[in-house]
Amino acid sequence: MTTAAAQARYPLTQGVNPWLVTVSVMLPTFMEVLDTAIASVALPYIAGSLSASNSEATWVLTSYLVANAVILPASNWFARRFGRKRFLLTCVILFTVASFFCGAAPSLAIILLARVLQGAGGGALQPLSQSILLESFSLKDRSKAMAAYGLGIVCAPVLGPTLGGWLTDTWSWRYAFYINIPVGILAVIMISRFVHDPPYIKNAKVGPFDNIGFGLLIVWTGCLQIVLDKGQEDDWFGAVWVRWAVAALIVALLLWIWHSWTHPKGLVDLHILKNPNFRTGCLMIAMLGMCIYITIAILPLYYQEILGYTAFTAGLVVFPRGVGSFIGSPIIGILGSRIDNRKLLCAGFLGFAVCAFIFGEVNLDIGPYTLLFPITLTGFALSFVFVPLATLSTRTISRNDMGNATGLFNMLRNIGGSIGIAMATTAIIRRAALHQTELGANLSPSSAVLQQKSAIIATYLGHRIGPANARPGSYGLIYGLMEQQAAQLAYVDVFRWTAVLALICAACAWLFTKPPKNTEAPPGAH
Image (cartoon, rainbow, N blue to C red; front, side):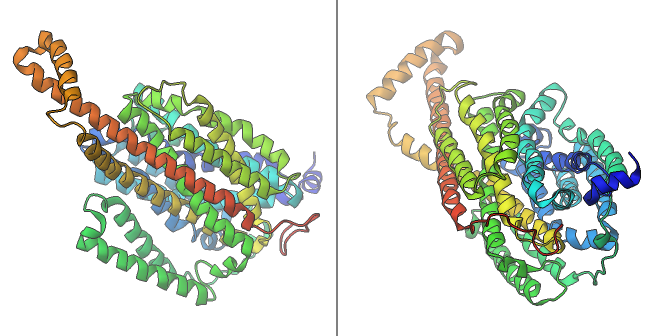
């Protein structure tokens, strides 16, 4: 095929088959989203290796998400200033190099610094990839483009725990980061070959960088990061520094909103929130971020901390979510152009809520296959959530505003995820303490049941640790079982609260306006 014929056939991608462009941009996107979850099953190993607690190890996740969120809104300006292709390549290279330093980190401080750099490098990958995909397909094929994008966005975090667990158990948790290096190299090669800047990017006139807006963004997201990471350890608002940090967060956030609204050349154009569909989408993507990252973070931990599974086994148990996503993505690609996306979105959230309620019925007797169906259904339901949500939110956004919209859209998902992880971690710790107090109230030393169970256990232990240590040992085992039960009940509470949040999201799906039939392309779109 000649160059002229190729450009005639694929005018939106300058002669390159749009599916080659899809593969090129989805490689780094998949890798970047994978990194938000691949370390989730390795957190206990990271904590042990770097002499940190499990709550401190969760900073590996939240620091990445918040640093990611800082760069997301700025990605549109950088893409227009330096060229989208050049900026995308720079981000992939930075992300890949930072991945090496994450794997080689000798201490918690170093890995957190490397994760911040990694999050900064990966922050622009999602909006850039989403913009490129939306512009590489015609409006009628956008559901296919978003299905391909959703396949990477949805599958990456659900496959991450399985891959991370296998790498951790087989070699070391450090290989959960080293795995990014060959993928990053392949992505650089493919992007260099198949991705091209459209004319409006090449000829774009970009104003000066919004230093004030970017500075305020760093301040309020930085304060948010510190509060989320350290708040639980210092009893949240019981600590004076937390109150000051929250005050700084609120002031910086309000100033950022005012500046972004009034500044004609601001880093983020918040006037796009006047679009009712996009405004609704921003609200829902933040809640979706909370739902999905809560389950991603705590379900593998439940299997490891409560049931004693290895990292690989825990990852293997949650692997069916990836299978469900693979099954659901092509189906939603077909149905997206035929069925009202609000119905699909509502159905997806309802399916997710049902699964979360089933997770909320877990007990200490479950096996590896007990939750096979709901875990699979979770991945399937998420396919029916992300694609319609992204399609409905951006349907009436013009091409010139697409970069700004996708940056803000993805930033809110990451902020929601960070808040969700922090809330879930806090809830597990505090609810476990509450349940332990409630259970302990029923275990008075004079209880006949306690005395009977203690005597049985002491008889068993007497043959192994001696009669003198048998009775204290029996009480120690009973106390350990009480702690395990209390922690299990705390996880149940979090799963049920997540289900309620998903039900609220299902109702919010109907806030979107019904898309008219035979919708024309939005202004500026092609």
